[in-house]
Amino acid sequence: MKRIEVSDLRSQRWFDAPGIRSFNVRTRALQMGYSRRDFEKKPVIAILNTWSDFAQCHSHFKQRVEEVKRGVLQAGGLPMELPAMSLSETMVKPTTMLYRNFLAMEAEELIWSHPVDGVVLMGGCDKTTPGLIMGAASAGLPAIFVPAGPMLTGRYRGRPLGSGSDNWKFWDERRAGTISEHQWHDMEASLARSPGHCMTMGTASTMTSAAEALGLTLPGAASIPAVDSAHARMASDCGRRIVELVWEDVRPQSIATRASFLNAVAVVMALGGSTNAVIHLIAMAGRFGVPLTLRDFDEVSRVTPVLANLRPSGAHLMEDFYYAGGLRGIMSRMTDRLDLSCLTVSGLSLGETLMGAEVFDDDVIRPLDRPVASEGGIAILTGSLAPDGAVIKHSAASPNLSRHQGRAVVFEDRDDLARRIDDEALEVDETSVLVMKNGGAVGAPGLPEWGALPIPKKLLAKGVRDMVRISDARMSGTSFGTCILHVSPEAARGGPLALVQDGDLIELDIPARRIELCVDADELARRRDAWTPPAPFFSRGYGRLFAEHVTSADQGCDFDFLHAGTATPEPKIY
Ligand code: FES
Image (cartoon, rainbow, N blue to C red):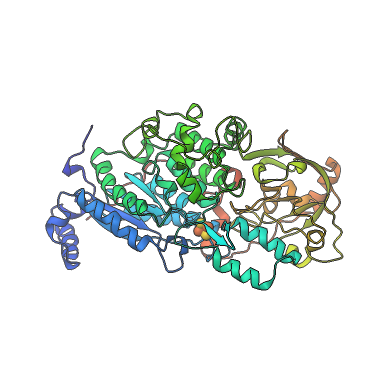
């Protein structure tokens, strides 16, 4: 195993160079109570901690960071905690997606500007995983990801409750009047029982699992419940391992290759994972200089069955998944679909990390001959309504709507939808196609999770629980329904979605991967001539930077100036 020398440690340029600058650095370290032996000849490990009083999914990180530090110290490194933006999915408005790139930039700059040799990334709530990994990819130092772990299963009157999925399901029942105010408040108190991220196969579980499949966590880490003692041990293991990764000079670029990204895509499909993974994995790959396209997702999806029987596509929750064998268990059932030679941060190949992995519950992790669905949960659609692509989680959609023709009922934006969706006079029936414009990265802005458009109240009262719904927005990974998302180009950039009008015929054919706007070309040309883009939402600040530089959903919504390129020069220290 190759090992670097003490003189190769990046941190020593700060701490151990001749001259006044190093004197100042050492003086200030001593000011904090460190002595020379704390930082001399040792790897300095930054711990990027996305804890905050607002980050409900990371409320255990105050304790976990101490466990990471213990591991770093035991291995002979110096742990230094760096707080990073916490991005609570529920608290941050208008949407955390607006700030994923902000966190990625912050992570990169925190790492780069400090005397750091290696990085521990602590995240889990939806955008924190891709944001931290994107930043670490661009910084390029040895890195390991500590996933927050899912919270415990919710319980209500003896029934398991899944965060997100059951919120949406019971909200429809509440609107339909089948649940009382009292029951609604009881559910509110029964849903989230412990620290940890959402315990459905929503975006958080999808992305932490993808990080593990990429090789950026220790084997098995992503499935451990947040409050399990194994989670604390995993955190310490990460602290020990990052010090070794520094000495071995193993950088994420040697781990996150095209082959490992295709492994991650296959795992997302087998999990029935979130549609948000499409955007995040493309953005993460872009930071590593790895080509990854919508077509890759569709090709992998067609040959990968859904094996995880987890909500919202299935029945169980993440705690059940862990006891059933977790991510190592499911990967052991799909080894012929994975490149087992890929390296992981453990120092072992993916194949080596799966040795001895087992499945203990065939209903939670299905065998290949009894899958939840015969192909992956996500399909990529193209056609005249979405020339650059759109995404649907068809494992969580209604099978009877997979081929559908219907007349459009159009909402110009989310405000228009909120005003009219429950209007008794709205001309809509269960065959209609609900269309919402201006929910995209530029139009909303920030690509919020507005894509599970609500069913009109008068149809809910008739028992309708799903309809074809189309938008350029995203959808929560915990949501379900026949929702076509991320329509690209988005309406605010002049995509065909901007031209749809009430009564237009729309054809959906998921098996053929088609989504068509059946309006003749002359009429569309007339509408295009009359179309004007919406006024920019932000005139200043980060929001303006976002709108001016964010790429389209099919390209991952990263900033155009942050894609992989030549390495950022090391800071000058004079
Ligand atoms: Fe944090 Fe769902 S709110 S993962």
